[in-house]
Amino acid sequence: MIWAYPDVKLLIGLAIVFGLLYGVYLLRFYFINKKLKVHKHRLLMKMVLRLGYFVLFLVAMAGPSIGTSQKEIKEEGKDIFIAIDLSQSMNATDIGPSRMQRIKFELKNLVKDFSGDRIGLIIFSSEAFIQCPLTFDQNVLQLHLDGLNSGLVPNTGTDISAPLNLALGKFNLDDSPEVKSKSIVLISDGEDFAENFRPLTAQLSDSGIKVFSLGVGTSQGSTIPRGNSIIIDPKTNQPAITRLQSENMKLIAAQTDGQYFEISDELNEISDLSAALERIEGTVTGSRMVEASANKYFYFLLAAMGLALLDMILPLKTIRL
Image 1: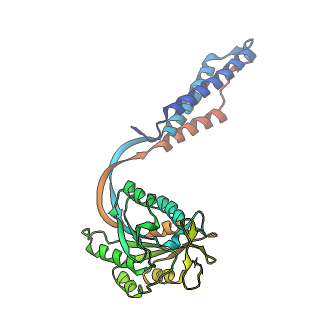
Image 2: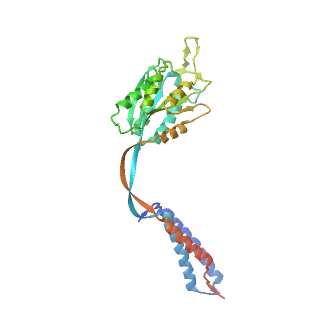
Image 3: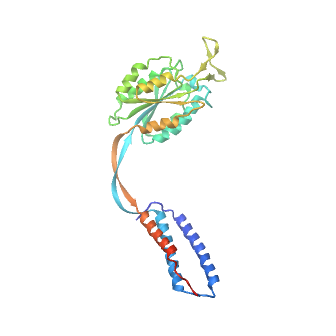
């Protein structure tokens, strides 16, 4: 027999409480009736009855499982590239403590929900680079996420097509053709100085690769810090203001059958993004047989309830007047 909830300390504790309370009850009964004639065998029967259904309740709580059977467990997997914009504008503080720090925090929690999937990291600004190839290793992913900063990439502008093109190439060259569920999470404030992503969305769609875009920032925007100063716009000689530009992000998601999500000062849709990724049907990459047993607690609970009901409706006389 296998026990689903073998909490011995809890069961012993309940038994001790029952014993103490029932002992107090018997002691009180004895003092009240010590001058009356008592049917000892009937009192003993009542004690056995109550002890019986209490023990059955304890057995039911422990979850007895009897018998085993073989059950097939299918292993499904998805491949997900997370492309993160590391341009200078991601240091803006319109979302506290900054866009970059907020994204790092949210992503560290997000990847934990997909421990059974392969996840890779792409960093980009005007160019895109593989920061971490597709991997199941959560420790490696967390280490790379901790080290994200705008100094890892050249900062001469933002080209949204760069990470999409890089992810598409890596997916096409992947040596695991059995994994057909592939998607990209594109994270950016939406500023795109190249605007040549449109031909890529058709290729991504034809390859069955969905893009889930996550816009980061606010419509009001903020200045861009650089060390102890701020970035100056050379055209106006005024502090540069970066704002969330969601149009391109929404378009990319729509053209690849993905979805657009947003993180701003009033909105946090990271949980919706996680749910959307969960809904993607993974590819069956293997299966294994495991032993499964059925929890039979109900039968013990039913027997205990039967004895308890019998104790209530058929009280045994213990005193002879």
